[in-house]
Image (cartoon, rainbow, N blue to C red; front, side, top):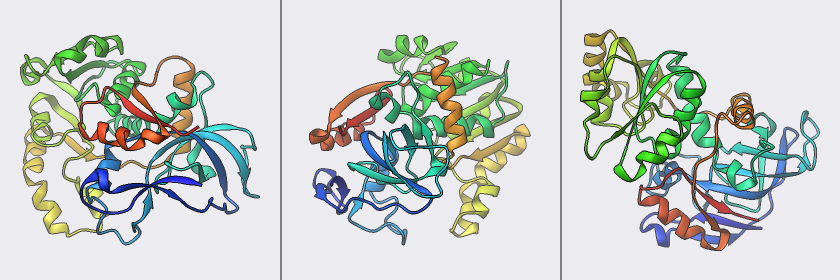
Length: 328
């Protein structure tokens, strides 16, 4: 079968190749999905640039891709709740979505929302699960005020919709050209970072969702209320998360030293969210999509033959929502 693989480190245009690889076999708890669409994520770009270079379980060549939608064509003998012919979508936490067939554990998949096509569905798993897990970590509730940075990005555009579905008041930041369509997603106050300083506008927020890192991580403490919450996707690990990381604990403690100081000043909480595959949460997303409370945000759809251009497009960092590769 055809697959898009990461074959080397260096110039991205020279690090990706179309390969012919064996069709995967499934174990008793897996389903085999015929892939119809997959999406490109900034996380995949980081992997190309060496984020996982030191991980023992990541070896080259490696089939790329985290998000996949398609049709089940085979099921393992212990699989329940799914059947051959079901349309599904999933976050593939081990990568491998950029291929004609993908084997996935049944615990990670969900039925595709009935009101979405395969390209729309493929745009959702990673960003929607990330956004949902971040809001759950921050225990967002109706009436809370939340600042969501990078509202035009994949995670931001979904987080806005999820926060509004929960009854929160949403501030978000974006560039001038994106202000109007971000308003259409439901944000209450869209801040044009090119002409406005969010730090003078947002006051006493209950929560900040930070997908950007410094200086936004540290500055989040300036706009939250006493006892507020800062949830980051890229900042230093909090103490609890650090304990589960295979890294020098003294180094991690030093990296979050200034964060710890800010936490103490505001009696605030701080968490780094590391995405985990979760079919039950993806089912929640499905229900919200089918209730038309959340909609996918797609920048462009590329055919499989233009997959490299899709990946290079995402490297520019200016996408509005998600970039999708149509496999079939």
